[in-house]
Length: 243
Image (cartoon, rainbow, N blue to C red; front, side, top):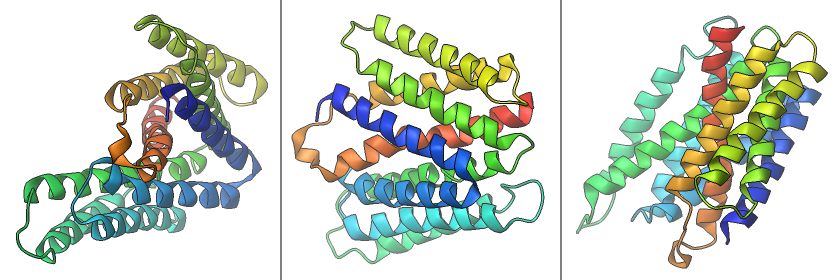
């Protein structure tokens, strides 16, 4: 799949998150849950991990566990149980490697790949934490909308680094527009959130810009949802500082 096609699909997924955040907490939970499952399904194929089923299970359990923890946490800090989820995911990753039959080829690579996927899946819980902040709905909508705009602009065929610069500027403008359209959100947080979302997308595109066909179609699901997960936790951190 071409980079431009993936960029458009990522824009659609980001728009889905924006709409879900605008509609309420329950739609947002449903949307992020589906994205976590899709990411976990494709991550093992993307990194070509030897234990595809076991690694995918560890990643999806980490993601769903983090979402459940944030959803049921009664008060701040909303992310206080996530270190426990990460610790358990590391433990499960070791168990996954121990259950592999001999010869355990690329043991360290497989372990690191599984744990890194669990970390990204846990980052998706940032969207729920954002929503539970004061004025969190506006922040989540602007973040997801800016990511959608950045993804759409990154599909334009321009030479690097011009495309990256245009992507960041467009996302910043989208953040400003969102701050004017939505109440209780000022211009500065809108710009910062938009720029951070675009920078995350640019970095991921540079890292996974060229996926070879041997990774398979399942790997595409992980690449499409990866920016959405990462932007969730980045937006939450920025929101805690700016709001």
